[in-house]
Image 1 (tube, rainbow, N blue to C red):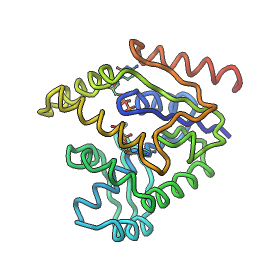
Image 2: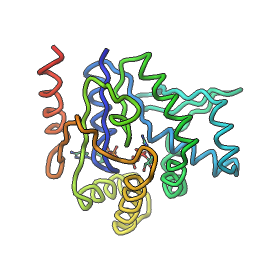
Image 3: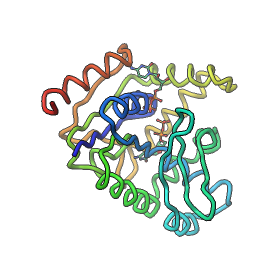
Length: 221
Ligand code: CDP
Ligand code: CDP
């Protein structure tokens, strides 16, 4: 089996690197952040409280699919729902860390993630993959970068998409989310003791991929 766990704070490069590794090693890429974002999206669009949300999540089958080279989170219910940009709205982003600190919500989503990782070769990114979801992953990486650099990267992403937002707003959002994610009681954002930490400040995406490949190549030939 080949299971790669990638954790780290917002803007550290997890999803960009995970997508590249998925292609290179033929792995299924699971964006666990999108699953928490979906929980927040459900709460907002269906106006649910936490009990209703947990019951609703238990009924759902969540998978990931590619359409025209883009990855969508797919919810199989009576009809299949394909979600991507909706999950990255400002409203969802503002609510997601609160939803992700709920113990019952985490229990349902963590079970789904563990099941996927037991049936597939995966690269999974999030906050608790190396510590909780796949503690026995073949490879664990913890990506980091300074707050300023991570905010700059995110700000650039927003500007390129035409989103009207200031640098200060982006910086405040990721600072607040990182704090909530690191301080919560259940499955906080934390480097697993046996994870390889990479400070990506000043590194290009290719630099980071090379470091990871060097580590994987030593063992997985
Ligand atoms: O892409 P970005 O770094 O902004 O965030 P994300 O990976 O989409 O995750 C959104 C939020 O979901 C995080 O800020 C966490 O609150 C939560 N999350 C979590 O608690 N555990 C995970 N394994 C993944 C995400
Ligand atoms: O998933 P996560 O929130 O950790 O970060 P991301 O969405 O993969 O990366 C945020 C942005 O930073 C993307 O536009 C990446 O292309 C960029 N990035 C970078 O410029 N240099 C790196 N070493 C890593 C990511």
